[in-house]
Image 1 (cartoon, each protein chain N blue to C red):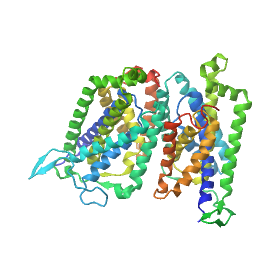
Image 2: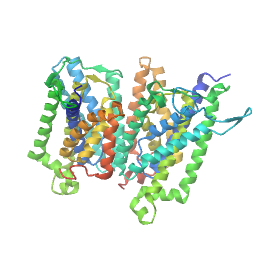
Image 3: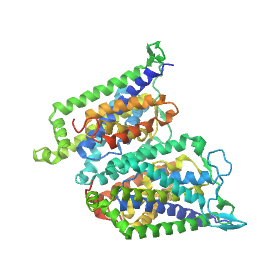
Image 4: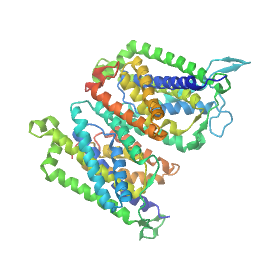
Amino acid sequence: MALELQLVVNGIVFGSIILLASIGLSLLYGIGDFANFAHGEFLTLGAFITFAGYVTFGLPIYVAGLMAFLFVGALGVLIDRILMTRHRDSTPIILLILTIGLALFLRAVIRLQWGDNQRTLGMPLERGTELLQGSVGWIDYGIRITSTDIAIVFLALVLATGTHLFLTRTRMGIAMRAMSDNKSLAKVAGIDTDTVMTVTWALSGALAGTGGMLLAMQTGVLFPRMGFNIVLVVFAAVILGGIGSPYGAMIGAYIIGIAQEVSVMIPGISAEYRYAFAFLIMIAVLLYKPQGLAGGRW
Amino acid sequence: MALSGPAAFLVSMLTLGGIYAILAIGLNIQWGQTGLFNISVAAFWGIGAYTAALVSKVGGETAFSWGLPFLWVDVVGFPIPIPVAVILAAIVSGVVAVLIGIPTLRLRTDYLAIASLGLAETIRLIFLNEGWLTGGGTGSTVSNPLVDLQYTNLTLLVITLVVLGIVYWLAETGVQSPWGRALEAIRDDEEVAQALGKNTFSLKMQAFVIGSMIMGVAGALTALRLNYITPFEFIPEFTFYVWIAVIVGGSGSNRGAIIGAGFLMVLLEGPRFLSDFLPGLSGSVAADLRFLLIGLVLMLVVTYRPQGFLGDKQLMTEDNT
């Protein structure tokens, strides 16, 4: 069995999927100072918009993905303008409860629109290309990889790079980083913090929407709870990387992704518990290194 | 003769409302009184239900089928009310609460929320995957002593209301004691409480464990209500039902928690009646509308009236993290 390296490869693919969600969640957490519990529903919505584009309208998959990017990004703006502007000065607790309510609301809307049953994306199946084959001692390094896997990793990295350029090369991106560092100072320096918040919601939503598309491409099945099922893993990646740091989130996503897949090999623990493994890492980080890997830096 | 029609429906709804009220009082001790943002209510609820169901089972296919009495001990034909299974449910919930509390209760409010959701999801995975213990996805039967009675549902309602009364009395007594005031001090400013020489970790642990034990008792009653329990009765989403009750009723008020549970029942059962008036509305759409309503109510309440009906406004609107 080509297990060991294959698990690492699977971990990199899964890490790429949660990468986009993690960056968005971390940005919102850092800039808005709250945990967005509706982030899982952003992923689900991205997946279902992709489904609508690809299956219902018969568009090419990447056009459907672009729809998910734009639609969930626009939803982020809408949520910020309608709901969150009223809560600029609310406590983290109020914001927490607010996003929980939002999560339940969005999931109900998804269920009303697409029903409770599983949907399948129905992308053409492929067997995957054998990249390596052979073994050294007991380690078998044969791995199989599909073109979908490569596309997922590639897309995630392109968007992560794009986010990096946005945050470092544009005025808005620099304003976002300033606000994440110190909100009052940013305000005094003349940054329109209200607009920055709206842009953060848009970016966070768009990235999560694309993450939902990648998730749908990889698993092939869609259901209303799919985003909620992995949102805690996304939280784990964000916390491991260091809350508020998108770069930390990138590292965190890959570490959690790989750790979770490789945990399948731990004897005596069945594969069903691989999410629980991510939670354990998360709690350990919260206890012993709450600032995460990035340690409060960007 | 068993009850039927509207009377049976009313009894069933009052029982469920009573169970939610017990859960809400348990959560209120943790959140309203002490400021612990616990989103693992469903986990302790489930632990209570599974414990009571398993230990009272007779020679079943799962572990711990000890055939212990659920509600009363038979002494040569006379039932003596010693609810062994219910007490064990509370104890097991309490022990798990200690184990979970040790790593998580030191965390900041929002981290505690995330960590407790993670633990709730882990416990749900255990219910689902450890078939030798819980019966797995197919669930577990409950040896319900009430089914042999003439008025099964009415008896359960009476038992639920008695338990609710005891829990309410205990919670109110606790709130008005020095212990309750120390918890409030932690909620309002943990550092001040610490400076005054209070062992805040120990006090938080006490509140967390007692609240979780109350949830465990609610679980044991739920096992009696359902007769058959599956992991799907204790999904993390149901935690938010209890949160609705506490927030709408008013964080920090036990009376509010009971009123909130009543309001929750209206929210949960309202869509069902809607489908009587709107013939085009199917059952599953009504269920989705229920979640829609719950999400909407949560958002509206924290936006326009964060203190709920009877709550403490300061708790919700003042930053003390």
